[in-house]
Amino acid sequence: MLKGAFTLPTTQTAWLEERKGPPSHCLEQKKVPVTHDLAPGELLVKVEAAALNHVGYKRMQMLPNTLAKRPHIAESDFTGIVVAAQGTTGFSQGEPVCGWISQSMAQITRQGALCEYVRVQGDHVIHRPENLTPVQAAGVCLAGLSAYQLLFHHAKIKKGDRILINNGSGGIGTFAIQIAKAHECHVTASASSSSAEFVRKVGADQIIDYQVEPLSQSLAKSPPPVPFDAVIDCYGLDSNLYGNCDKYLKSDGVFASVAPATGSLLATASAGAHLFSHAWKPAWLGGNARKFSLLNLQNSKEDLRALQALITSGKVIPVVDSVYKFDDALLAYDRLMSGKAKGKVVVVIDPELYPKSEAPPS
Ligand SMILES: NC(=O)c1ccc[n+]([C@@H]2O[C@H](COP(=O)([O-])OP(=O)(O)OC[C@H]3O[C@@H](n4cnc5c(N)ncnc54)[C@H](OP(=O)(O)O)[C@@H]3O)[C@@H](O)[C@H]2O)c1
Image 1 (tube, rainbow, N blue to C red):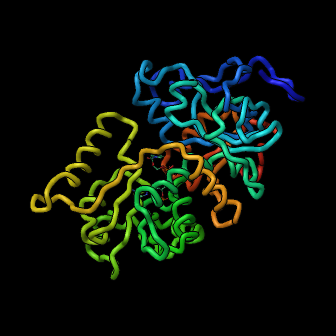
Image 2: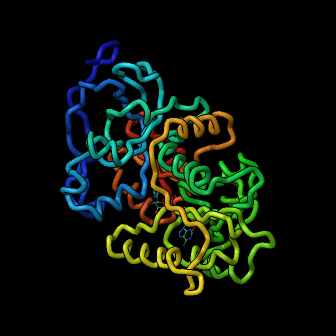
Image 3: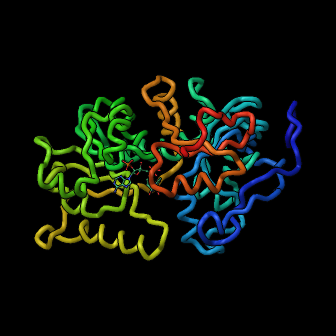
């Protein structure tokens, strides 16, 4: 049960995933109860801001109601203030935190981030780094963990490695570049010409414009003098990038990818089949012997703490693309789904935090 100085309302406003389809069809803003009963190890957090991730709308579009367990509150990433803690959590009332709701947790609790109060397990939460604003902190966990796990668990990068990051300007790519640079790696990143300067400022040593010709083709034609130790694919749709990588990735190098998910089951299955045909075929049939590793994002308190330390040290600064009001969440999805976001798309729940200076791009 809750105790202390915070008076909690019994209801809150949330964006509920009601039915299968694109966000404009699937989501409705509704009143729902605020959970007052927490299980041991759980926190109740008053959400200040949430951030969108592609997995959110892809699940809305792909999964039927029974599999998605609708209705439930949308999205995963949030930052806010702890208003209650049950048992040993390592957090106290009034502390600013950022956290995320993993798919496995959401399946059980039906919690989500696009709401005013979220119930979450303490192992999915870290103290908010003091050098971040709530808007910067909103999108740290899912994209930051993805980048961290791709680099360290999948590609097992070492200091001094030469790394290719495909999609250097996205939510995951901007974290991946900064984490790899903090680990003293040399980073080549792909970006369109309009994002090249931005990606260089984020930290990439070298940029390849993927719009001049597909990255797999330009790298196969002009491979780097020293092959990459790892390819970190933060885009996930170009199966030829893996298919051709024997020309630019070391023979013992790892190709780690976010997954070929597209938002449609058929297109995802087709992209996946194409990708895995490269990975499973023997080399004499055109297959590729390089190790392929697919991100299956898992919660890890240890990884969250490592990410927190990188941010606190100033080596990693979360990149915010745009900020939307709570009522304008559907516009925020439009921005995310445009595929043009440079960094995180943030929805501010606490109206006092809505900063005019960080208003959405026109
Ligand atoms: N498997 C998992 O557990 C997992 C977890 C998290 C995310 N994901 C997936 O990871 C993917 C990336 O997420 P994100 O949030 O980082 O993406 P994002 O922020 O939406 O990426 C946007 C960027 O994509 C770039 N882009 C567009 N077309 C491109 C192309 N053909 N090649 C390279 N870059 C291109 C654009 O860069 P320019 O400005 O340079 O054009 C744009 O800035 C999503 O598909 C997501 O579903 C998977």
